[in-house]
Image (cartoon, rainbow, N blue to C red):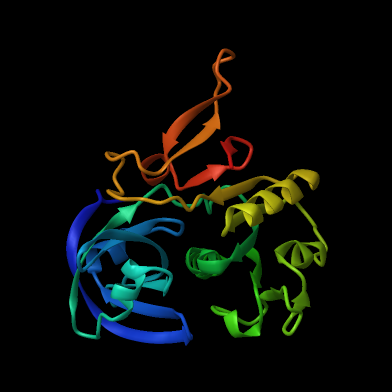
Length: 254
């Protein structure tokens, strides 16, 4: 993996996935070549600090990466107004990424913007010939994005897929072997999936979504707690951007 650096990237495509979520494709061969699933990039937006986005796909041949942007505040609204052909500053790839080599099968569980980095993981695992099951949860049908053939979809409203949250989708599975669980999404969802994995004696890795600024471990905005090996300490602080964002569920304190 190459060292993270800042680059200039051109917006080569921009599509709305629903009324408040966009999918951008950016030309940046250096990041496309180095990125692994679970990593993220920091992207500039006018008059604001860079914003972190999980990498949703990477195409080494085309030299492009994709990200999903859900419009929530001023920063993401600013990014949503960037047009095709414009140039943005992009820092990456950042973070440690998922371990996709140590297990023969995987279950991907995601909600919200967590479906974007899991999309990258799904594509990569599929190309590796791994057995992969994907469960995505959404509020209702209008929010369903990044669905692919074979994905299990749940909706809180019950108007599409399985009624309920991601746990309802996981409960519908017939577990065989010893799959590893990868989960990205809101903290309550990740805790729920982590406990589900624990109850099934399965390894689980979560990707923490903290507020970030620098993305390289200097500003300490994104610290989170992990269990300490020191018997005199209950926990210690680590930086999500540099030490994570992916952590073993048994180690991180959500």
